[in-house]
Length: 278
Image 1 (cartoon, rainbow, N blue to C red):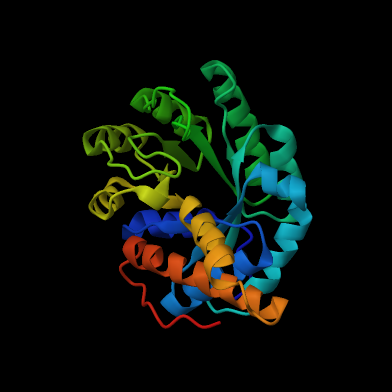
Image 2 (tube, one colour):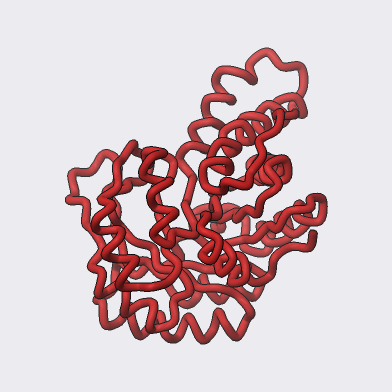
């Protein structure tokens, strides 16, 4: 199936059918291939996404071409998303290279400016034939003692009205940590937005809370830390003693695929989970 150039139809279907798209963060060919293989075996669509820091290591163009090539080899929809983009410049760079979706994380801006930038970015993303996610959240960072903020439902509503196709909300999940959601707050945000929502910190959200979130309009759940932990573990525990670098790459692909598969099954009831290959 061709690469998905515009994530909006995927988002609309997930919202209508009551499932969520896993959005797997990756920073290498091996990670991307492991995620795409897992999605192909599960028979469900998938989003791959890149952090700004990873784009600095390669480029948006490199990632876009990599994901396009991998999408050509499978039969499930594959989209590419910019995660935690901080403004116009990076979003435009990614859209020019063919990303199907971009995120604006406006945590460094006052809320009125976030609204203004959301309107501008929505116009740009939609003109490029792509979707826009906007953050109405802030997350605790491991190792720092900052307070975990939560989403104001009215702020989330205003971002949706300003043009966001998806609104990322903070309702208890934390990047890289086990967490439980405030389902009452999530329901209040869902009622206010009346549109697609996103959860970050998906690696550690309790499965029961994830299932409940699917009934609140959550269409995208970000999973990054679980994959990076799997890669580091495979490097340290499984690759020593291998006779070639190619064997090491195979170990990494398999570790990522194994890690991604259960999330596909959890987020989409139609997923089938098959055997992991190398």
